[in-house]
Length: 115
Ligand code: DGP
Image 1 (cartoon, rainbow, N blue to C red):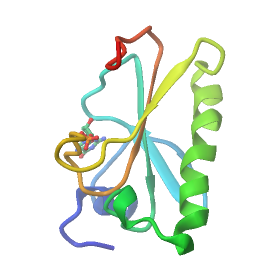
Image 2: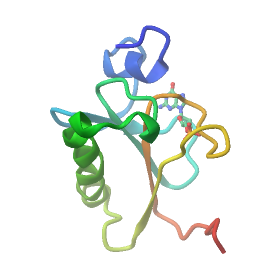
Image 3: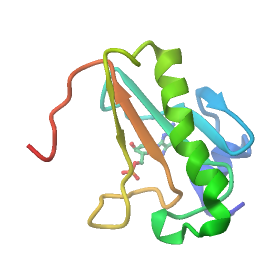
């Protein structure tokens, strides 16, 4: 745990969150500032800053992040209607919280940043 990290504090239960899903590797909760009707963040329970820090020993974490997404989508009723998975990395990638997280966005058709 990183003592200065808000997402580590969420995993530890020191900051309250609206839990959606968890397993051995990841924790998922609703984004405090939703950008879509369904907006869930999936984070590794272990502190990893972003994809730049991923190493071979993080294979379980990397897989768990992605595998949690369709489970959450099904749980939220957006699996068939569709959803976006976004991971922001670093300053130009608009990463604000420096604990790796995968955004799950659905419930409405969203603008596509790549046109
Ligand atoms: P990003 O720009 O990819 O780093 O997005 C960080 C997201 O984290 C942003 O959409 C808002 C969300 N967020 C920040 N602090 C909290 C918090 O304390 N609780 C919850 N639920 N979400 C948070």
